[in-house]
Amino acid sequence: MRRSVLYYMAGLLVAAMLIVGVMYIGTSDDVQRHHQHLERPSEADLGYCLHCDDHTFCTHLPLIIINTHGAEIPGRPINYELGIHGFGDLLVTTPDGGTEIEVSVVVIDNPNQWNHADDLPVHESLAMMRIRGNSSRFFDKPNYRISLIHPNAADNPLPLLGMNPHAEWALHGPFLDKTLMRNYVWMNIAAEVMGPGHFVPEVRFFELILNGEYQGLYVLMETVRVSPHRLDMNRYREGMPATSYLVRLDSRTQTSERIVDTFVTYTYRLEGLNSVEIMYPRLSQQSDSVRDYVTRTMSTMEYFLYSPEVIWDSRRYERYIDVNSFVNFYIINEFIANNDLWTGSTYLHSDVRGRIVAGPVWDFNNVMDNFFLSMPADEFMLANRGWFDRLMMCPDFTERVIRRWHELRRGVLAEERLISYMQEVEDWLGSAIDRNFEVWGYSFDPFQVNAMSRRGPTHAEVTARVPVYEGMSLAAYEAARYQTHREMIRELNPASFAEAQESARNFMIERGRFLDRHIETLRQFSHPSRHALWIVP
Image (cartoon, rainbow, N blue to C red; front, side):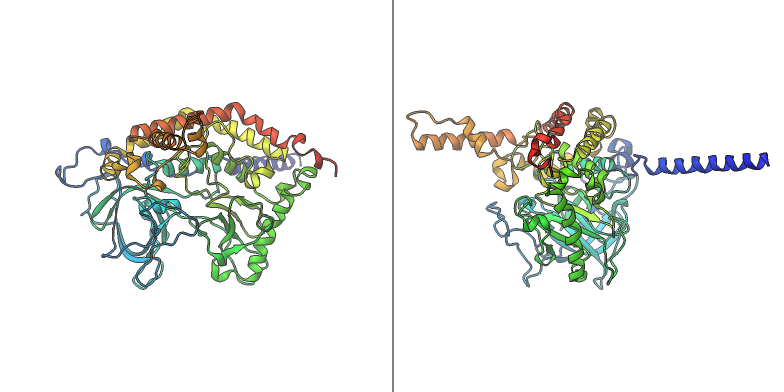
């Protein structure tokens, strides 16, 4: 009897240990992420190429070769040459009004070997192709979207550059980003910040040849799509009372049929001219019941946030959102000074009957002071934007952000680690950087590109340098402003790759140290003095 009791107790102990072990494994911060520059050999690792001479194009990076067969790729704004940007820009289309053209795509990716344009491809496919992006449509070096197809026009999902199979891909061409690596570096870092189970697009460097012409260094990116290999959610089933959904907040690339009016849209609380657009389920499945479900679930959270209940019951937000995702989403975007957040390409999603999850993150081309206008390193940019403006009124949320920041600075976001990471990427890219700027190096002169392809000072920054003196004529004042404006454009735009890298690295260091010193001041946003009139129900 005693022995059986001992066996029973031992069994309970083992079961408890297994449960604890599973819980520990499930909450591990380890993120399975492919860092291309750590997984693939560098030029030094490969040594001299024995199969080509000095006149043969040879690279340690993968190659993607695209042929449009003489057709112009649609998607440029019609006022591209002038560099004049406005909402609702008309885009160049095909002669019959189409927005895409059919192209052929060849992928050359020899593992642990040099790559040449005439090597045997690992993938060949037809694809539909267009220029993609918002402001980036004005760049001389465009971004593209390709959708791989079979000859019968059905999707042709392929595992490009070692990523999971899919038909749709974004080809990001760094142009305003003279470091060439913001999307690569910060997508990889964001994946570690967001943690296991959160989809962050995979990224790979490659070199592009378009219609026989070398186009420089590009980054192949997974797009934000609901898919078993990307944002994996329970799929929509017609007639179900609830559905998984993905929404995007944007002001520039909307499809009007996808837009829904949640609480913040019809009460005019969205940033700028944003709308909420349902990206999944797809448009053909967006019945009245689906649109109503998405509107109701989002509006329930928004109504709570913008009512006095956010003060009276400040932990209730946990019922509606995946809190850890919003904490991590805030931290990575605040740290990298992502000025686009809540004003463009901001995603939220929810698995069927689940809580709302922040993300996926998308498009870090303009982060770390690479916006068209200079970004301050010593200010909180996002604490009073979008839902964060209201979440920061909840003391528990701000405390979670503060704790998580300190945790990340001891590991994933440690200053030394990030400096080393950026240098490792630069070293690994090697001569591909030089080749890229052999084509696009003229862009280091900001007056050789249009106004949408360079950084400029604000009106206030120019005014601060050109005070009005008594007796100064209007003509003299305007001439001084014009000259100062041009001088400041020179100052704000890097004159070399090395200068761009140094500027990005210094901003990252300054930004991190500012948050180290001031992260606790986020408590001001939830202090009772900020909302004293709401304290008593």
